[in-house]
Image (cartoon, rainbow, N blue to C red; front, side):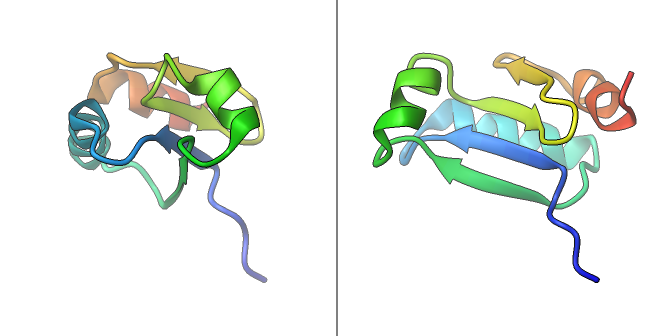
Length: 80
């Protein structure tokens, strides 16, 4: 049975901070995640527009606003 990834990265097109967030997530060896772009979604734009990149743990609802580091990603993944 396929499970949806637990992590969601909210980002924008052509966002250098989003690129940095992806590098941090790679350094943290974050598990599979879904990228959602806020640019073309009014509800996501309203919620995350000024905050991107934002990393969200789907089941807990916890979020990390940028800037975050590998240790913070690891902690979010571990559920701590």
